Image (cartoon, rainbow, N blue to C red; front, top):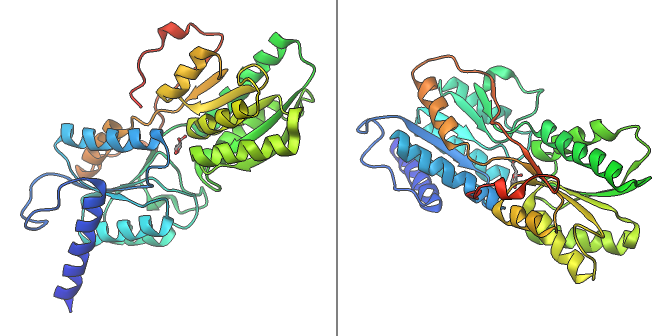
Length: 327
Ligand code: AHR
């Protein structure tokens, strides 16, 4: 019975590893040397995400860490299944990107019982969850990102001398940390300021195709009544810009475009004047994840939260100074 279960676990892990494009584990867990990290990734919904996966894979190689990487194909149940396989395989450290904030408690209790440290990478879990169930969060300060987006608009409205700006918001995956906090950080800066009105919030799930659909729907419902698009990621923004141009409008002029991530494609459109503000969110978290994994395996104490340094690029900046983005 136990042998059958072990075979099943090995089979699941091989499938996961093939999906992630990594090599399959060799003879057995104990036969191998060095740190073994199980990393569950959400999927590949955006260029940002693809950059994030690459950053993790390249950093693992640099650090000599054996990486078992699973691609959950945008489904929480797949991520949970991958985490359970990693626990059964007795990896040294677990890392994962929680696709949404809720629903991790049980699997994290299983990791804790197995004595496996946990790194939350890029996204957080609900603040209601028992804090002892994970060791560290490494990723962006999404509240700050929302505030930076609003700060740009506070400057822009002065610059335009406009009395009022009507904003349509295209949000990311519902109940995910970036969607929740980019929305609340943004609102915290403009709440009570009658010059700003959020006319509608619609979710594009961080997907370019949905960003385009959302924009088409927004234009249908609000026509020329939208002054600003605040989009939670560049992928959706690129889709929205397509829809704006197809409707005969000029992005960056007829509609002010504020976006988050800082992909190369968005920076190129900022230079072309089709985007007005890009709030940076870096996917380059690989080295930080590996350093944390090494420390946790060594039993060292690590900080509870690590935010990378991030900036904002706007039409008011020297755009020639922006180097290649790498994602
Ligand atoms: O969690 C980070 C967000 O997820 C990025 O903004 C987005 O592009 C990605 O898919």
